[in-house]
Image (tube, rainbow, N blue to C red):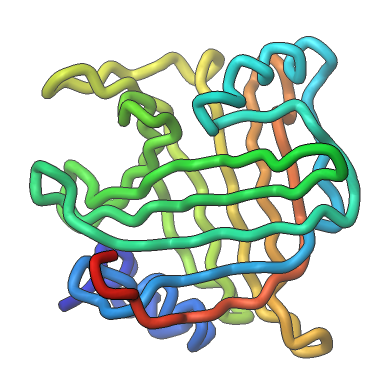
Length: 212
């Protein structure tokens, strides 16, 4: 069974590094999950106002105010079908700061359009960022978001670009460190960079435990 990423990327999927191919081949029939762990060398971004507002997102696991360097990072990806039968991949990230652990959860789903992928950035599945997926020349994965929409009932409402957010995710294998370099950037036109973090990680593919 092909994953939503394989369907969306077509032949471009085969250009990815083998570990990235295994990560993005994950689907609801897979017998494994993906664990990514390592260190974020730098977590930065967000004005004082933005970071103050981000306190509101802590309990809902989609924002946090802390910033820092050399922060331990852990993420799990698992695939399943949602209640509507759509292929879904969960992204459960945790950042271990010196005085607290912060989490950031989101989900990617089969897009409403054929061979597309949507990212939902909140626990209710309302804020949607359709994604462009591309293999880089070095076999990395580049994800860039398009215009943000709100998913209300069975309808989508397009958010004016100046009020929405844009996200970029880049994952590339580093031959020297034998790890993956990752860089995530979240941007808002009125407030600039909301959050940016980059680091080095390894990817593991453990078998799913019974009942998962």
